[in-house]
Length: 178
View 1 (cartoon, helix red, strand yellow):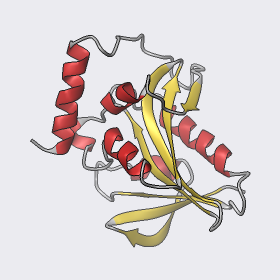
View 2 (cartoon, rainbow, N blue to C red; view 1 turned 180 degrees about the vertical axis):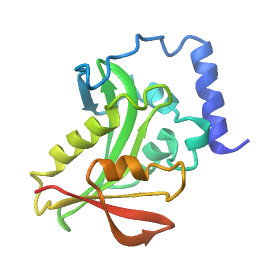
View 3 (cartoon, rainbow, N blue to C red; view 1 turned 90 degrees about the vertical axis):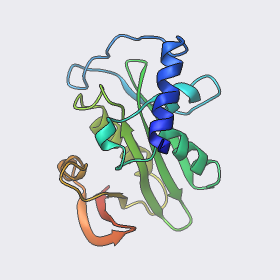
């Protein structure tokens, strides 16, 4: 069993046991859903770790549990849960290096069933708003797996421009903040 499958299996068992309550589907961003970035705590971390992208997308983004483990070893990590109308719908993590004026969208995931509702675009806007006033912040970087079903159209549609760089097989993009 691969790691994403193991996490998906764990999440399914937790849902079956009633650990994660069924919640109503939040409104879309266009309908006025309140989309927020929230810090994680002992009461929310398990539910955020249980969020999964569709099986065909799992090669494009690490599971949230892996992202949170990486964050625990990085002084630059800024992990946040994404909520829409008080329902957890995704996860984002920035790498913030104020000293080097380097700001990177390290992870972004919107869970299966919540995609295409405007939450990812709204989360990117909130992340950009967070970075914009930081020292030397002129752009936000990210990277994505270049693949036919990958997230490139999403990022390009939000204004990210490819830099021409490839990092660990991923295309690097830059979003101007000014």
